[in-house]
Length: 251
Length: 91
Image (cartoon, rainbow over all chains, first blue to last red; front, side, top):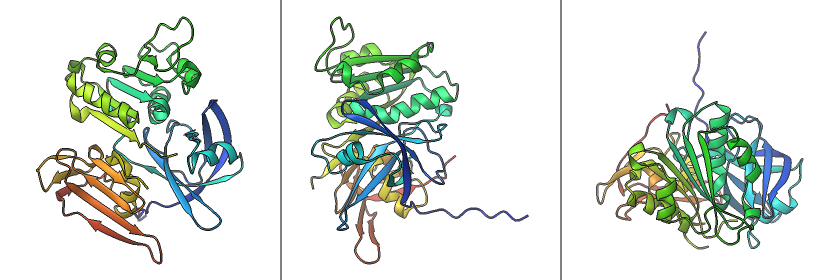
């Protein structure tokens, strides 16, 4: 039998079906999509989403995939930006059963698979948790025990995205540690970090440079740049620090 | 629209429209300063008009892509800022 290699396919737009839309925090929602013919993704990859108005005007945004490659549905985390062109539609208008035009998975660089090892240092600001959540879920689904630390900066306790899901993932897993910092307000009795991530926090939380952690940093541009600079300043190898900046706008 | 300074990974979509290989994990050598690194580790500037990937070390434009959507789709790809691109099949 002759086997013919499949020709490379150009990255194509297609329609995913929203099967569930569920709020997570006051400003974020998870969209669960069934995408016909989805080839699977690597943890950390994103999709492009495109909206087309009746007059033909199009707006396109990138959203990281928050689900593990092992999950059947594609989960996108959407943060509602009040003056955004795309996110208010995704969080307020889109319903289960609706179609959503997207393409992907995209981007092989900010991606992690269990075989790449660790230790794994994940640093997130706000909705920057999405691609890192995919990595944590992938690690769990694969039964992998790479030592992993997540340092997660949120404005308040109520705004910690995936808070309960992260607690469940960390429960009973001694190799996964989750460290929160809350930058604006804290619940009474909060004993965790209470400021923006700085070099001192990283010095306390990050693995030592000798352990050669693989670092993935995702969030708003100032956070990403502060963290990447501080990690290199602490002696971590620049090539093992991977960053994904959200732009100043987007939405 | 404001220009956004992002990671090379942000150019992955438009580059995947052109290349069959994954470009963000390709190694690029800067034709200006000689620095080499993965495209994803460089800086990307994304606007409605097009995408520019610049060398993280010296800011030299490595890759410029402009797409024309009206009429038949057309691309302009300017690679004169890279000495070479080393593309690899995904393992």
